Length: 157
Image (tube, rainbow, N blue to C red):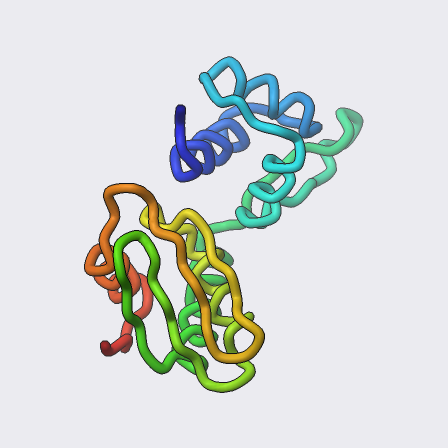
């Protein structure tokens, strides 16, 4: 079964190279590439990738991806949100725990989700100051921390 990171790459590739006017059309392309995806999952993927629709004149609307500068700005915003809330990171097995300043757990979890790191299966934000990160099979806490440091300049252990 193909994973989330591969699926997100496929969605980007399809939108960049083909005219896609609906989720149904996109689901068909993904199916041809070997991805079994529900409409709900695809909706979440499109939101994560910040896919929009633009007018194609008389041809109706088509999906579009944000430009490179907009993507870099999003990554800078995520990095800033993460750093403002981050206190520490620890892990055991396939679970990482990020401690945050009070009230910052949602922003830190959203930053991790938005970065779409291949090591991360998902996050759960605690009520106030904890984020639980489920790591993919084979990914370690060290791998996760190393990727975070690549994406978030200034991150210290």
